[in-house]
Length: 138
Ligand code: HEC
Image (tube, rainbow, N blue to C red; front, side, top):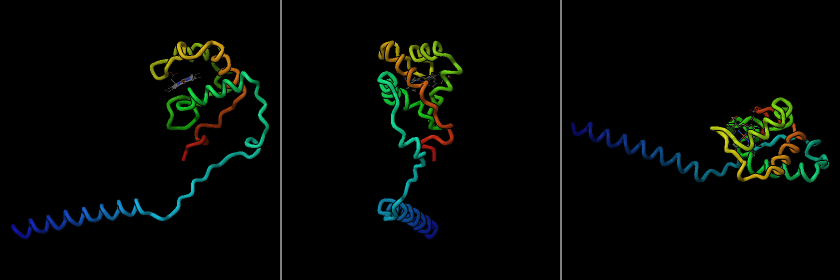
C-alpha cells in the first residue's frame, strides 16, 4: 500500500516536471518563426484611383465592417464587395447596413445616410479575394 502511494506520488511529480519543461521550452524558445504573407505585387503597387467618397467608404468599411467581413474564414460575415452589391442590389445593401440582423449590428443611428452611400460607392470598386485565399487564413 505504501509503495503504491509512493509510486503514485512519483508519477505525479514526473508529470508535473514534464509539463514544466514544456512550458519552459515554449517560453524560452530561441527558434525564430517566419510568417509568410502572399500578395499580388501588381495590386500592391497600383496607384489609388478612388474618389473622395470611395476613399471615405473604404475607411468606414475598414473601421466598422472589416472585423466581421474581411473575408477571413473565421469571421461571421461574407466578404463584402462588388459581387454582393451586384447580386443583392443597392437597396438591399443600404437596408442591411441600416437595420442589421440578429448576427449583425444596424448602423442607422451611428452612420449618416451619406456615409452609407460612401460605403456602397467603395464596395462597387472592390472585388474581395475568395474566402479561402483571404488574409489571415493559415
Ligand atoms: C459583428 C459582425 C458584423 C459587423 C460589424 C458587420 N456585419 Fe455585416 N453581416 C454580419 C453577418 C454575420 C452577416 C450574415 C448574416 C446576415 O445576413 O445577417 C452579415 C451580412 C451583411 C450583408 C448581407 C450579405 C448578403 O449577401 O446577404 C451586408 C451587405 C453587410 N453585412 C454589410 C455590412 C457593412 C457594410 C458593415 C459595416 C458598416 C457590416 N456589415 C458590419 C456581421 C457583421
